[in-house]
Image (cartoon, rainbow over all chains, first blue to last red; front, top):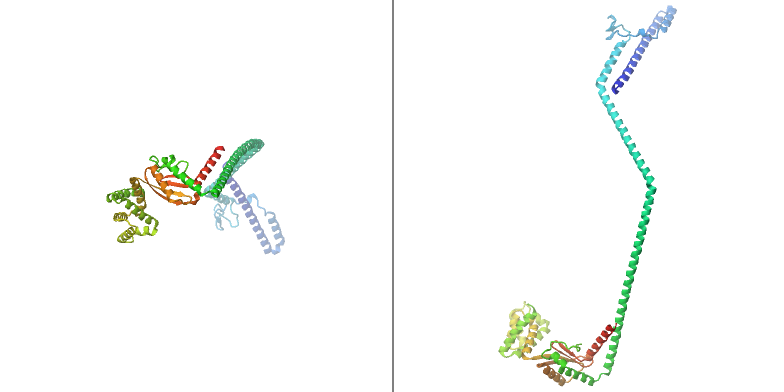
Length: 271
Length: 185
């Protein structure tokens, strides 16, 4: 059975119930009116109180309508005092025919089903689809959550092993790093030692050279002072004569002679 | 063209001119005096090369100075030519090369003697004669005194030096000692 059919069945049942309730209520109204009419007649006939009260009591006993009291088909068009009660007209005070109510209800539900049904149906269908989509999304989320849960549970299960593996790797790396640092430190130490040794050697040689130069300079200064102190004019004459002799001798010939011709430097005598 | 090349060309030309005129020695000596004055005076160098002064005035000044230094007519014309060609800045080099050419041509050897104390002229004459005999040339020797030599003398002739001074001997001794120590270590 389709959704639409189920809905239509429910609404029809409800409408039928309403009709029956309405018919019953109308019959009660009619009975009430009759009762009021009886009371009215009683007051008008004050002299016959007994008769009136008896009538009222009689009428009160018959106030509940019976199935036979239901107007099924008389007066579909309305009430008329002149017309003979029949399918079209009914006597005034006669309840509305239940057939007319059923017919009106059927027409109403026809129009509801004809014009309002598709909109309601499509709305319901969309709502159903939306709910189904929501249910599907919720199901997917549930599946995803379950997968995540499984993943984390698995991960937690392997966490201890992973931690141990990482620790082992770290230990190996730390050991290698330690060895590398120690080797580097040793190499640096050796290099520094060698550099220091070379610096010491260089400084020692430099200091030795400086000491020698100082010593020689002092010796020469001392010699100069001694010579200057004891230098005499005849020493100057002797040296001047020596220059003359050198010019005249082999050295002079090599420097000043045709081969030297003043263009060389006298070896060993250039200051 | 550098100063040496310029000096060589002009010196050769002046040598030939001097020889032709028969006054080479005077020309060399006179140009030497002029070059010495030119080199020693900054103002003279600046004024003779200053283009803001008229050429006639510069030439007149050059002639006047040359005349005062007893430069011959040939020498003055040579100086005017050098100035006209704007080569006065090369004059010291020209004279140096001219002197060198003249010395070679005349067989002259120039030298300088430095002594620790003043020596008699006879010493320099004897030394000059000695050098002349050894070199086989006429020697022109100048001399000066330098007390820092302590004792002895030093002869510079051409590019050669003969050093018999105490200062030179001490320097030689110092060098020998340092070399000996260096060999020992």
